[in-house]
Image 1 (spheres, protein in one colour):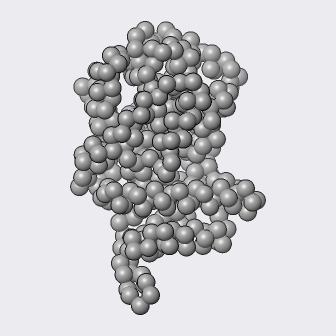
Image 2 (cartoon, rainbow, N blue to C red; image 1 turned 90 degrees about the horizontal axis):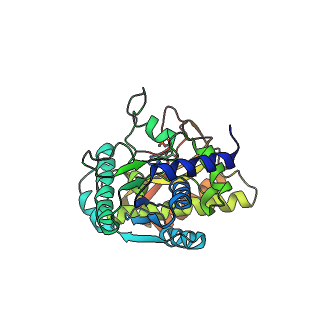
Image 3 (tube, helix red, strand yellow; image 1 turned 180 degrees about the horizontal axis):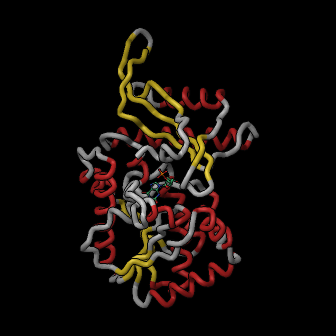
Length: 315
Ligand code: XMP
């Protein structure tokens, strides 16, 4: 592999020649879009408009963290709260592919509004190799439509620029470190966010439950890793399943939903092994989730599926 500084220089040069007018980029704060934004900002400066769309499917505290990260890097970031619109269009949508399509479309609609505001002609995206390979862009079957590929409507009126298209996650991480991007060590988070971790109906209370459960998994595993009790997994989170089972609260038998905890080791997300988390840590996570989400969730399970045959996310 070329040295990282050379990759950075080449990417910036390519962007300089590709972008000759106002550009816009959706910044989620994640490593891929942040690297794409910093590269494009270095290439075209204030011709690039960075927009953060709060879809309502972000993790706990995420919007503020992203705002701060961009402020520290000296890049202007516009935060758009579009959660109302996403929840509205996803009402009654439970099919995973349909969800991704709707999210992709709404993303683009929000962008068209932002594009109209700033007159952008180019759309910079942080698509990396697994995103399009797994969306059927190569010889392979469609595994899932990643929002930044499969969900694009055909009438989109922007020229797409994808500086990270040929890179895998570990390479992008290396570039992020080189660029001193704060989120370089952050675990991956899917574009459609918690929407693909809430199986079934996307109601606000269900998304909120998933947000809390994800937060508990993240905090507990980071603490455990800091105390040397386990290695930090490559990716670790919770998903909410629309599976109701009977539980007990005092004397009453109640129906509640199920949270599945997922933690995997991987190099690039293309394949993965489930992480062997010590049982006492899993027990603490389970207790905290059922306490915090009393009445809503009464069962926590741990996913012991490798990829393949499972995927890392549940949708
Ligand atoms: P799967 O679930 O396909 O995920 O094994 C592989 C890696 O990709 C992330 N992922 C996404 N990333 N947009 C993204 O940018 C998406 O729609 C998306 N879906 C999954 C997933 O979190 C894992 O790291």
